[in-house]
Amino acid sequence: MFIFRGSPPRHTLVVASMPYWNIQHGTTAVLASRHAVTEVSPWTYGLNSAGQIDTQYSAGQAVSITGDIRRLRVAGKLIVPSISNITGGQWSYPPVGRMLHSPALMAQQVAAIVALVQRNDYAAIGRAADQVRLMGYDYHWDSSPPGPVAPVSWIRAVLRYAKTRIPASKIILGAPLYGYGWSGGHGTPISWLQALRLSRRLVRLAESLTTGDVAVLIPAHNEALVIEESLRSIMVLVPSENVHVVSDGSTDATVDIARARHGRAARGVACGRPRRPQEPWRAGSPGTRCGGLQCI
Image 1 (spheres, rainbow, N blue to C red):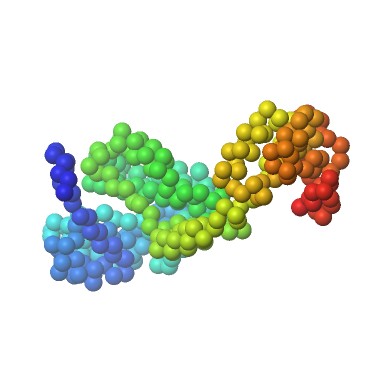
Image 2 (image 1 turned 90 degrees about the vertical axis):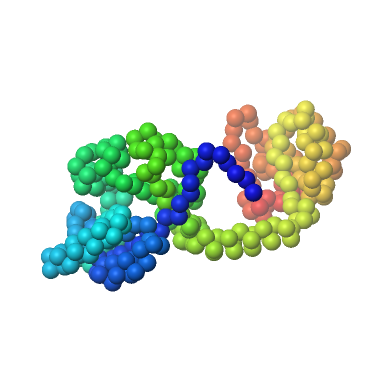
């Protein structure tokens, strides 16, 4: 057991997310388990077709919803309204998608959210809000190049900035329990459990491979000074018969040293005259043979 003196006490945060169409039932459930629920997040806001923040319940529901939220406040529950991707009572991606892919619309959305707390900066939000939830994910997404969903360096930078504007005690970081599997230029969402299973499968595959399954191709151009030491180092790890040196028009002793050391060196894989200095390497056409080496 480790005891850290001076450490702040740890608390469990349980948030009840309540869709506006089910707030009455949700309120009853929360009040029945008030000892277990820390705060309530009613889905009272969404986006209209123009992407503007809008209340999602009808005028006829206003009285009952206001009454339920009052009951929760009287019970001492912290109320943190949510803005969800709902338009006209239906899940809707287009208004959110347009906003997320347009810096101008995103700026308007941020300004509109901040207007709910009557000021236009992080510090004002921190002063007015009991909590500020930072969604630390989707640094890469399904249509972006492959990459981490929540890189540690980015998360640290976000928190570093947030703490300069908002009291650290009010900041809650939203951590992802999902990722993407990229193939063909598109990422497919996968859960943490799917990602774990995939990683274990790949580990088993990697563990089943041996050094005999690995081939090393060493391109070399006038590397006489270092080719012998390079081969000696590589052949400690990989069987010598799997190591191939390809001399790209070398005019020094690269090929002779490689053959003396290894016996496997091909000269002139560029399939033509040796390339001039600074000239890009030109591979041969598939199936052609150059000095005994088949170009692939």
